[in-house]
Image (tube, rainbow, N blue to C red; front, top):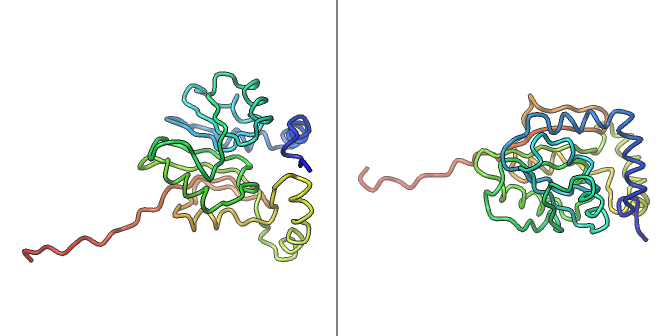
Length: 206
């Protein structure tokens, strides 16, 4: 059974309503000031793509061919590759910025995908993410747990109870507390690969 996310016209209709209710502002803030070599992971039907100031700097990936066709129609100037977040077909350090908007709720293997994101980021690169996450209030989090199996089936893979921020940090990223917005289940933040201090070999002359 195809879920909501695999039916482009239905997904676009749902997103259009959500954007009228405020999601558009979240998208615009996610992309504010983004520059350099940019990868958008899981572009879906391409609703973020027209918002980039320099589309020529953007490469997008999307695993679903039907959604990708709609994204190409929406932003024909953006190169689009059919690929999954868990297997990014790019060299190490290829991008300055990786953008992910409402994607990691549906990624099948988040740790592997975040490892791929870190791999393709250049030194000093950043991950910009917009996501809905597990609620911080226990009663509402338990409700998300109860509805998750049915919702995941209906939506085509979306998990409403994922703690994506914790997954990002576990993958070796540090979330910038000054560029983080949390409202209800919504999160928008910038994260950068953590600097791991390696032990230097002892000086043989010492």
